[in-house]
Image (cartoon, rainbow, N blue to C red):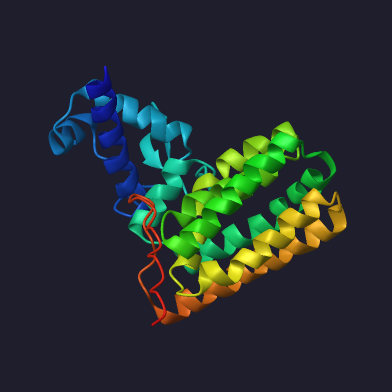
Length: 253
């Protein structure tokens, strides 16, 4: 069963990357099933399942008169982690990152405001653990990005709004993109850690106004990091690879 899933997933990734990468532009028909079967070395059943998945993700439309055609990017489900991963692998754009930052500015401050009003002791403990993981990664080396993601998702979960919780899951891959870009700056994680602490302290203090303001400062700081990385023309991260780990700082002589 796992082998079947792996074959399906691999075929889905290949076809998804081809569409997101522009091999099949909007309005174009993808090759017929026999050609795709030969190209990917899989059965018609696997190709059909991959096409169904891409229809569900908004990348394709299929019908008796139109065949199977690629939809414009505006139709794609940008909250689907696979779509974001394909976009990252094929090349992030300034427009994509701009949309991400604008979305964060809309969702996160409001979610953090709710967290300041509703967070339980267990919620606070989970966010504190994520913060401790970030701090440890900076001081001793390790996985900063995953803990950063846990921190932000923990804040959205702590608002105890089911819609926002679902949004936090959907935002996962998008947020990881921003966090990895910020991490490529040598001083990025260390300089943002106090900003994270300010958000958490305001939530603990049950101060929704301060929490919202601190969240905006943190998001805008990440925007500055992204702009600097884009300006440097450095290679942007790919979500198809594991998040990079921070190196332990060198001991002072």
